[in-house]
Image (cartoon, rainbow, N blue to C red; front, top):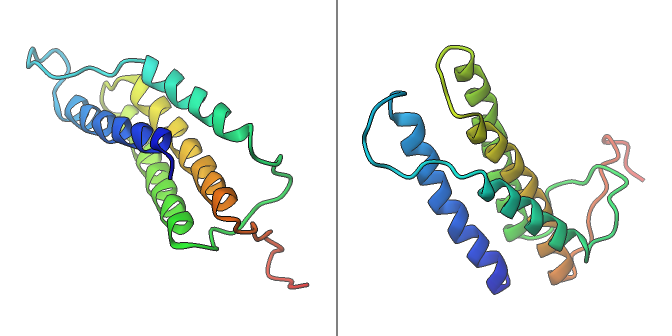
Length: 135
């Protein structure tokens, strides 16, 4: 992983704590905690664009295999998607900051592109999903 990726992941960890604090606090509560800043969403999108510049355009679904780092990115991505779905459900019952849902959506996209970037940097060939048909 590059220094840029580690810096982004450090920022992600901090933002996830901010998001958790935001969700754990009742609306209108005056407790001091970091609010979600929409620039974090833009930052993730810019990092996704930067990483995609060095990747081939994806024309097929790929399997999350090839190296433990790649698999861990995909596991984190699926956990992030699950959290996003639960947050959407919660938003139907409670007032939440819409930025939290958007952030989790973009974060899961970031993790997918990060997995592809790591595969590319390690020289790991992406495995195309063929629906179990084999070749």
